[in-house]
Amino acid sequence: MLAIADLRRRLTALGANDAHVGRVLRHWVQARPLTDGRRKLEHYLPQAVREALPALMDELHGLATLVERHPGEDGSARLLVGLKDGQTVESVLLPRDGLCVSSQVGCAVGCRFCMTGKDGLLRQVTSAEIVAQVALARRERVVKKVVFMGMGEPSHNLEAVLEAIELLGTEGNIGHKNLVFSTVGDPRAFERLGAGPVKPALALSLHTTKAALRQELLPRAPRLTPRELVEAGERYARQTGYPIQYQWTLLEGVNDGDDELDGIVDLLRGRYGVLNMIPYNSVPELPFQRPAWDKARDIARRLHQRGVLTKLRDSAGQDVDGGCGQLRARSLDTPAT
Ligand code: SF4
Image (cartoon, rainbow, N blue to C red; front, top):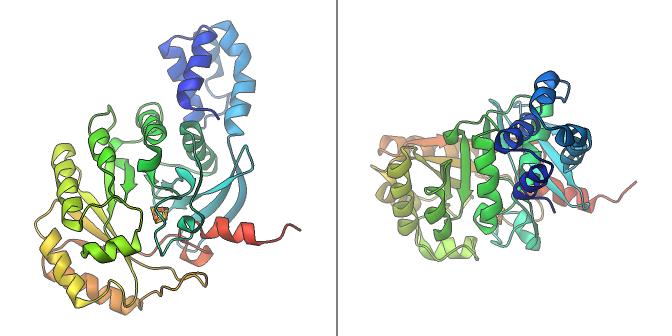
């Protein structure tokens, strides 16, 4: 399984220096055709690297290939992406040049409302496979923002995700605050994210203000209370200057009551962050329901009035089996024809 560090080592062994390595990686992650800037590449690269380049680029493009593409009406498209060993993950082309990538095949956190969590962790996605999802999407269209909100918990594959973030934020030409690391709140992530050369923005999955309910909904998330999570987020926001994106999947009858609204106001008013409220996308396999849009809008309005910056969002690709892990689950259920 190829990591970006292996790739750097291979190029170095062929005689490339740091600038040469950067140039090759830039070509890949920015999805430039080999013919684009060929003369420059040929001029700058040692002969052994030049000769290896066509096969290397084929290999890199083969790390993530398009299996299915499901366009949505909102400008999004859900991609089922094949990895070299036959596993699949999901990427989502988001409106406004965003891309959501997967960092694991499956996930060990086991959130009760998530299809990806149902079967546990199958394997890690390598740093090169994460970047390959971006290169694949860029062959379809422009990508200016990458969010780590697809399949998997990025903190559980931290080294690979940080390596991918560093490359995307340098040779990948993506602004650092347009890289969004999303986590249920792993203390290791808080320690490491602010220490690297590329500091991403942070999204924290809150979902409820009640510690016991959070433990029930996110059974294998680290045992941080919602208040501890928000305090850790606040420190990171102050350190980086980026607001925290608090994620709230709105589940009918579970976390949409007045008690939760009071809890949110108590936790988030005055914090440097925004609450992203996303009405759940119901699936037959799971017992949760999506609240009515009017009710969700009313909740967002009341939170606004009480001083909590709240954005009501629909999950991208809602009309194309949206929601992380659902497309993959469906493709596994569908008998091959
Ligand atoms: Fe894992 Fe995210 Fe699904 Fe939870 S919601 S099981 S963290 S992929």
